[in-house]
Length: 312
Ligand code: SF4
Ligand code: ZN
Image (cartoon, rainbow, N blue to C red; front, side, top):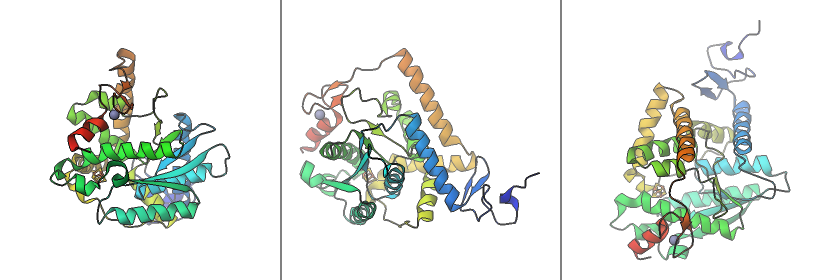
């Protein structure tokens, strides 16, 4: 009978090779060493990309690189998967929102990584695109920080991806982010956003968004970066304290700890709701914003409505 290498001694060892483990999958009880964790994550990302047809030959992928943990892992993994291919190109796109005391360090980290990997980088800033830094825009509006920032940053990323001539826009959303979004949309009672959030179906109207890390947990990403020796303790956004996401995040993390697999089950349920929705109703038709031409379901897109409200 074969012995389980992870049980050879008191300290955990990799279930695959018996080397000291750096990560434990709570759901399966599997232990992984650094090498097997990295190859496992790479394989999972390759599988997500293949099964969702996220990348096709000829793609020029704009990789949203904020310099934070998720986007750093995303660029490293996509670079590993595609650097030897001539038919897929990567361009890092970075948005400097203008958040004093926070973005300087992450912007520097993003630039260092792009240079190290030899990936072209395009940076856009809120002052260049919207005339003001996020800090200035948010004066007196701190409580709405993330909704305002989210809409403007999405627009800025699309502009950067268009400048890069991209056919896809890859973002570093991980399993935790995706599960949090599902729960937040449920809490807000926003069924339309729940089923529209995938961003995959562009209908040719905008650059499709892809999320290659959507099944990789925040913990796996953190362990992956530590194993690569590129872990950097970067500051947190000062506006994050206002975010509903922050509360949902700790609630979900605690539930996941007590009931491993909760986040994956949330994602599976989202898929079920999506397919039920798409077979029963088409939802509001996607038209074009009367001012900027971006796809939207009403007369004005979210960005143009916000632009008017903020006087940008
Ligand atoms: Fe923007 Fe909120 Fe994220 Fe800060 S925490 S970068 S304000 S979305
Ligand atoms: Zn618009």
